[in-house]
Structures are given as C-alpha cells and as structure tokens.
Image (cartoon, rainbow, N blue to C red; front, side, top):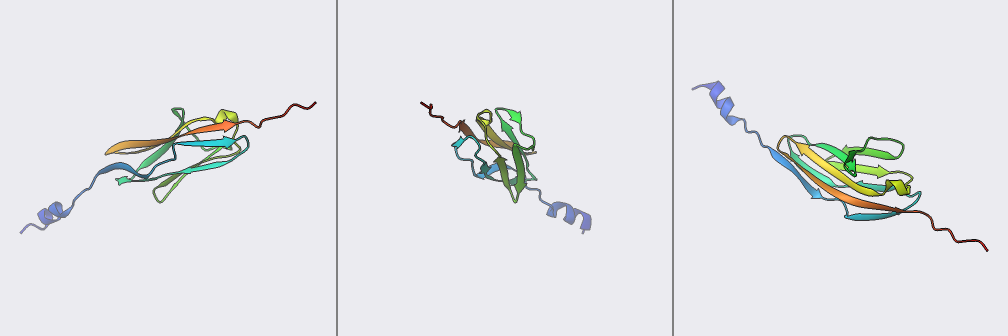
Length: 117
C-alpha cells in the first residue's frame, strides 16, 4: 500500500465561479448631498476578488467613495452625492473559475430652487 498515493487521491479541489446570492437594486434616486450604501452578496471558490466600477472606470476609495468587502458582502458607499455621481455602478466578482457582475443606476437630482419675487 502506498501512503503517498492514498493522500494524493483524497485531495479534491472544488472550483466554483462567482455567483451573486443577493444583487444590487436596479436603480437608486438620490438628492444632492445624500449618502448611499450599496451592498450585494457573492459566493465562489477559490477566493473572490471584487472590483467596483462607475461607468466602466474602476472606483478607488476616496473622500467620495468607501469600498469594503466583509464576509462575502461587497459594499460601496457614496458620500455627499453631487450630480456628477450619477451613472451606472458595477460590482464585478472574479476568481480563476470566472466572473460575474451586477449593477445599479444612480441618479442624483440637484436641489430645486424657487425664484424669489
């Protein structure tokens, strides 16, 4: 009996592409100055890398955006929204087995002002 052979055949590697268990809402309307939090839930094996995009450009953490991922829940926070924040936000999950994405369309409306008479 070959102990090394037994060990070799007992090791199984499972590879699962990313799958969203909970996707982003399809759209969100914000007012100027609002903050918003977007989160989804993703699973897959091996470890998943999550990247957020706005209109196909990668989002970097900044004074405007906070990005995190804890327990398979990617989170994007938009702080102090302006009209320029409007656009399509995409959460992309990738691993060596594949990739999957979901998105939300964010629209920011400016404050309406009434004319003074």
